[in-house]
Length: 85
Image (cartoon, rainbow, N blue to C red; front, side, top):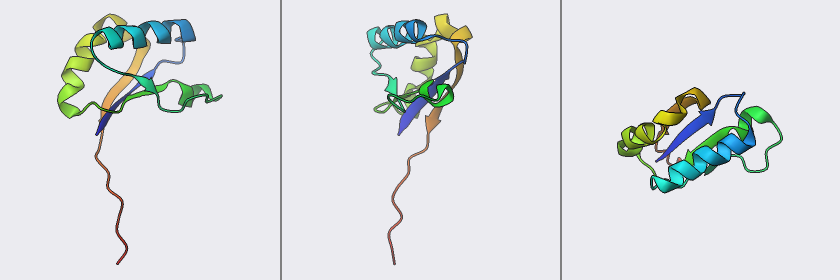
């Protein structure tokens, strides 16, 4: 499971770096879900691949000072590859 969050469209790269660094200091390893993406909507989505739904509260607490920069924070469901019969 992972946790994803999306920056609002108005947030520039410098501010994103600041938020990601703050999350790092809080113990979260955030990274872009779509590295090197040219489309702004996709480039603004980040993930914490090692986080679980139980980390959601701690992540939201770490993002408190950045509420105006974040559009959403959500846990991604666990997915499994469907086996062929």
